[in-house]
Amino acid sequence: MSEVDVIVIGSGPGGTCAAIFLAQAGKRVLLLDKAEFPRFHVGESLTGIAGAVLVELGLADALDQQGFPRKGGVKVIGSGARSEFFAPVLHTTWQVRRSEFDRMLLERALEAGALHRRGEVIRVLRDGERVRGVQCRIPGEQEPVEIAARYVIDATGQHALFSQLGLAGKRKINETFDRQVALFTHIEGATRDPGRMGDNTFIFYSKLHHWAWFIPISPTVTSVGVVIPNEVFRPLGGKDAAMRWGLENINPDLTPRVADRPWLEPVRTAFNYSYTVEPFAGDGWLCVGDAHGFVDPIFSFGVSIAMQEAREACRRICAVMDGADWREQMEGYAEYCRRGFSVAEDLINYFWQWPIVLGFQMRGSMRRDMIRLFGSDIHGDEELPAIGVMRRALARERARRDAGGPAEADLRPA
Ligand SMILES: Cc1cc2nc3c(=O)[nH]c(=O)nc-3n(C[C@H](O)[C@H](O)[C@H](O)COP(=O)(O)OP(=O)(O)OC[C@H]3O[C@@H](n4cnc5c(N)ncnc54)[C@H](O)[C@@H]3O)c2cc1C
Image 1 (cartoon, protein in one colour):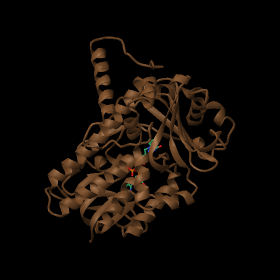
Image 2: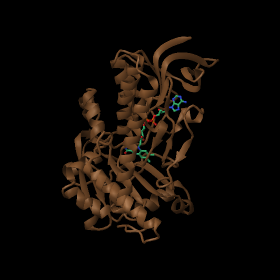
Image 3: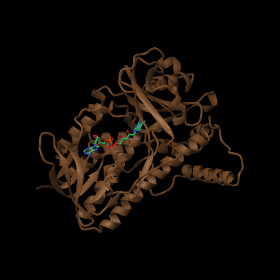
Image 4: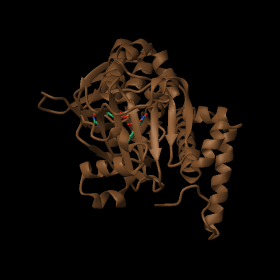
């Protein structure tokens, strides 16, 4: 049986960044992915924190050369002038076509010294509770292959492999964001705002949990996605019809931008994408990125959370390999991840509760904190004052509802 220090299962941004950081720390790393690259993936708008990681990895020039637009911020557009606001990015960042972006990160991991094989992991190998490797199917090989490692990282995204295998906990559906379906494609020649504003992410919304993204990923191609509640989606008569309905009904500013433009990709869907898994770290293993949970795509936190967790995972794994207590390190890692999720969730809940108030706060004394939050600076030890304000308002609102009072929201359910 061959042996490495760390096996990373999955070559999305979480897996490749973990492999890069670990290889840079001198570990022997093997990345395994069942997919042939390049492959399509949703998740194309990157926050400022993700941009800072990319600059640190030396990828800025390559991203520019690839023609990925530099993102200046996110413009959120409701159904009236009062409901519009703009959140500038915290650091330089990009809008990306994920097939090319993920391939670039994989190449960077190989340059850093990681190994990569195509292979589908089907089992984890254990000594009692301790994970000591994996069994995987390698294309062209008759029998599954066993590979030993001191640590194994699950970075399999929404496949959540360790949860499926019963090593990590069961998927717990996040009921606030889960009754929704996302439909998406790439659109040629959609009308953007003039100048640099045209390179930004636009979020359109009108009613509660009805929204659309508009993300320019090349000089002419825009990723467009529509998110609607399941009960709205079901009677619409299929994916294409539901996508069309969303483009025509979610917000009047979106409709003319995309009318009669060619769709370059088949309409894809994502359901049940909002969940958590507990526990997600143990003796010789941990999960990074979507493999242990995902909150909601509206403010584009997914890739940057995966990258930040990859860095923290590397730090913790190196500490264990240097002799630190694994329980303490894994608990520290889990706390770090939960902190980020909790801030992301509270920000998004607050937005849906009081979108117009949030727009005012973006222009007022909370602006600096807001820019940090929208940049996905969400893992810090200390609570930012703005998130404290939001949490207190959400707690008051919960108490009011529990006492049977009326909801105090900018938007009423559709
Ligand atoms: C509708 C929607 C819109 C989104 N929009 C954004 C956005 O604009 N910006 C943003 O930052 N995020 C966005 N996200 C989130 C983003 O897509 C994810 O958070 C991000 O891709 C997670 O990266 P990851 O590395 O954890 O997993 P992934 O990128 O999903 O990578 C997982 C990899 O694991 C491999 N794999 C799976 N099972 C196995 C196995 N058994 N063996 C080997 N390999 C395996 C897969 O082939 C895949 O390559 C969005 C998500 C959704 C649902």
